Length: 200
Image (cartoon, rainbow, N blue to C red):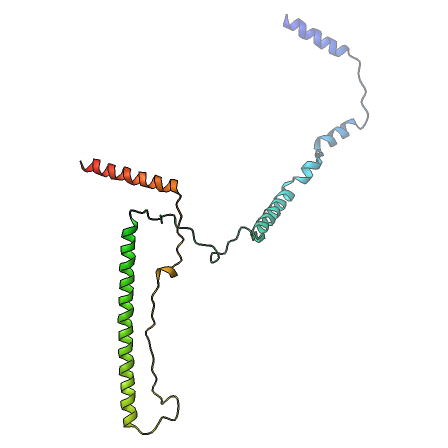
């Protein structure tokens, strides 16, 4: 059966009329086969070609980096020497119960400072007296006065009084409102009760 179909196809093909081709048909066919196909390049392909895209992105990245390096925002910069020190929050005003203790401490510190001042003054006066006596004894021995300032005896006081009173210190003291004082007292009570419970 297959042979009958093949024979019919062959007979039909033989009975077809002959088509005449142009004389240069074969040459044109071989030229098209061996010629390079022309590529159609779109506008976007021209812009984003590798030869142009890489240098353009590198230039853009360099410009962005330079912009951020040279852009000086003076509002963001703070001079570290002009910044005010932070307020100490750990200093709490003393309640009336603890004020007696602080008064005693202040009186003791003032007494120590006055004692130190008096010892320094007494030492200084003794040194001055000894220098004056030496000058008197040397002036009695020598009848001539020195002619130049380099020959004159010089009195140098190396000690400088470095006493700082509490008023001279510049501490910022936080003022506590009445409500905060009550909270502090309640916390103190809780801590005391917790400590007593812990010891029991």
